[in-house]
Amino acid sequence: MDQIAKSEPARRQGESLEQVAERFRHWRETRIRGEHVPSDLWAAAVGLAKEHGLQRIAHALRVDHDGLKRRVERAGVVARGVKLDTQFVELFAAPAATAAGMRECVVELENARGATMRVELNGAGLAGLASLCSAFWSVP
Image 1 (spheres, helix red, strand yellow):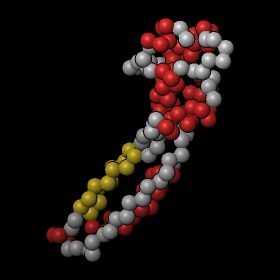
Image 2 (image 1 turned 90 degrees about the vertical axis):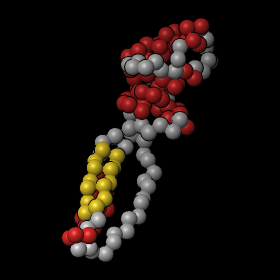
Image 3 (image 1 turned 180 degrees about the vertical axis):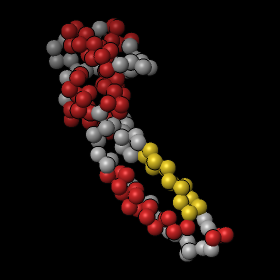
Image 4 (image 1 turned 180 degrees about the horizontal axis):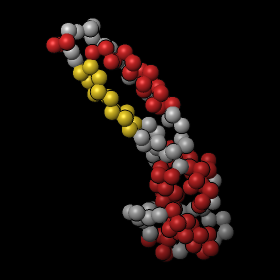
């Protein structure tokens, strides 16, 4: 492997897809036949997959989609296109209270695409929370 590729960090702050693609191109031109992709280039690809999705990065960098997906999963990175295990939280609503004693709660949600939603509830509003969450998380 060439000395420049060894000394480069995994992905420099703000490094674009085009810059990482150029690093992959340079590595492909200078590599020894049979040599594996260096870990710093894989790390850069994983970082890009987090921002742009697995399919786009695998295609743009000409790397194996399944290999990139495994590395993303090992790194604990949530990337677009990676199915997440759904986590459930059971909420219990207190019996209906009087107007003076109504309880309030705030629920903040984030989906796999990074979209967020904040819901402020009081009193009987808690009854519709499950369907609201389901609708938010199911939007493609």
